[in-house]
Length: 255
Image (cartoon, rainbow, N blue to C red):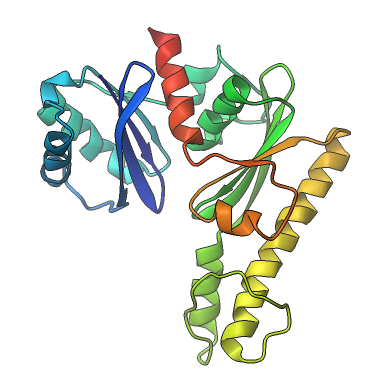
């Protein structure tokens, strides 16, 4: 069995595969202070629940954008599964996808994994809009080429910044407002966040389309993707498992 780990700034996703089939998946909040023993204590009962013996895990593939969690995750793999994990890097993917960047080593592993998943499962050219800690736009050209993209502040980060910087602005839940003109502070903030990000999404995708000279296929991923897809027609499909699909694709290519 294969264990894939997608370590992001907000959450870490663990998924176990038997061949092409995903057996189970778990999500937990990213905590850079969590130790290997704590990971073992969290994951072992979940494995048991799905009838997975730790000795069943033969390979581990990790995509991480949080250097502080890498060492504990390596220790987890050694202690629990007796496996040395493989970390996704630009060098690991250089034979699978062309990386048309000034410094390929600087791009986040998750963005490259998503691009690889697009090449394997969707039409190109394409753009991945990932609603994570940052809202990112990753451009995949023809011939399996990662062309770069856009990084903007994440939605939750924007809400936290408003709350911290303005004493009278509360923390709010992210919801789709019925109208743009808010009748109170909460509604006004929800409108600014929701419709503001819809405008950002549409505007950036339009600029990308102009620069590419062709309309790309747009894949949304990340926890807030379905909510924001309700407010615009520019997202063609939602795929919450895009990064996991990319990790599985890398593993299959390595066998």
